[in-house]
Image (cartoon, rainbow, N blue to C red):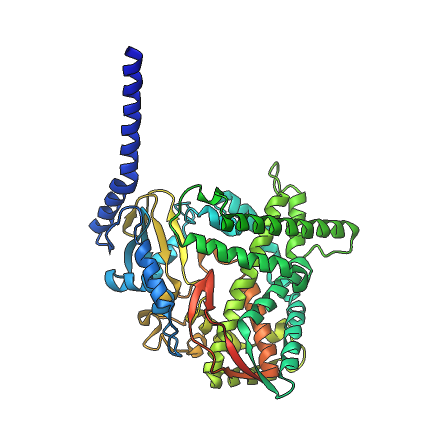
Length: 511
């Protein structure tokens, strides 16, 4: 009898403890965090049990993305309606809810720099949905010493001297695309092309050649698999996350698992061929993959080992994703914007014909001032990455704001880039002249331009992306003029990066 009473008492205690812990995590803790933010004058949305603001977020996104907008650069309400609405209602520092976690939205350049410059480990990437980690577990997902070590290994491949040598490789990829366009335009000297998939193929080819020494055709299956995997992953992430559900053998879960397995297997084969070629002396060791493999075979410092082959595979996935998506987005919006602004298209063309009359090398690329101004202004109006995301790993302060551990932080780049308070009354207009004296003097703040991030984790590939974009734009403008097709619908939206929802149909004219 005593044993029965003891067992019953223990069971009741465990149940009560479980209920108390659950109540704290889904109700008491969020309400306490909400009160803490309110006490500091930070306003935001009231907490909704478990789901937070997911329903409202999906509702606003669905409505905004259901129809295109006029041909203008006022894209914020369509691309990021929820964040835009939150900031308008509650101010430049406000909050909303990601499930049971508060999300602090900071639309202030000084506070943003404070977050991005932090070296004490108070801010990290938010805890990633396990579904997202299927895409890759490369450098962008790492923290602390792991990140620092991996960054040191990869940095040499992105030094400017290395990138100078990539210009001929970029040119080969661009030349192939341009020849195909010329064939399409042969009969009438003009034709309609959707440049969005064209630039995806171009940047895929460029990253394949520069990182792996192969061409797009060889890596085509990997790219196609990754594209499908991204689509399935984002679809799953838009529904309520249920821990462990990804292991349930549904049709889509099994497809995600199969795609990931095949991508990993194909990359493993690429790595094995590369390793064999390097040993035999007929494969380059100075491309991205070669450098990673060298670091995997040697000690980096003392007893600390280099990367395992599994880590190399994850970095390869990262190269494919980051190397393709961001630059193809930048080039697509650059062509659309220049089609909308033919006067700047002609200014850029005249500069290119004057500066790059002979060989397209680093010296010529370096002197393309108008092209650089145009690309920066396109990055401002249509940034490939519309926001940066952080997470308070421990109790911390941002200037005078005290934050407990466990708060998500959104740094809304797109909203910042369209803010008249920072860029002037013409913030929604295309005006490359604002960058005529460089990035630091383009805005009213000393630095309100976060296209490649800021601080220690500034995008490692920014010079790679800019050089590739300049080469592509220079070669295209040399051979073609272009305008928007009547079939084009202006509908920017985000799928990992800022993309044209219904394509980017352009009518090109061979010069």
